[in-house]
Image (cartoon, rainbow, N blue to C red; front, side, top):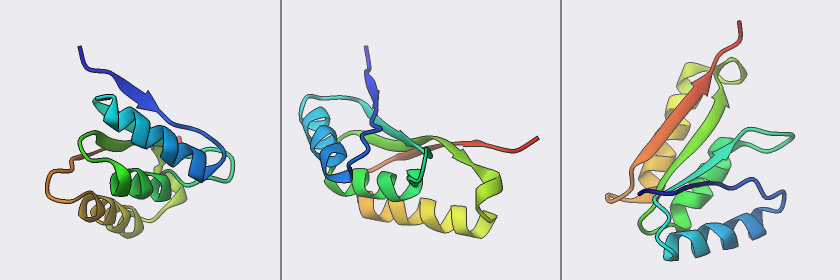
Length: 96
């Protein structure tokens, strides 16, 4: 069985501690979402930077909040930060 974890800690430093511990424990995938005043894309980039084996992605990223180019650029950045062994999964929501 593969286990995934949604990390939504309000404090980014605490979230990264959780991500590192989950990655060491063998959690298959680490997810974040847009909520309150937090960016799922910035957090996914941070998760990718500290994760060694886990898949990193966003659970929900509202498409209406970003242009297609900005979303594609952010996804490419997260992939590059995660390194060659990284795989990023994305889930998006649209208004309407």
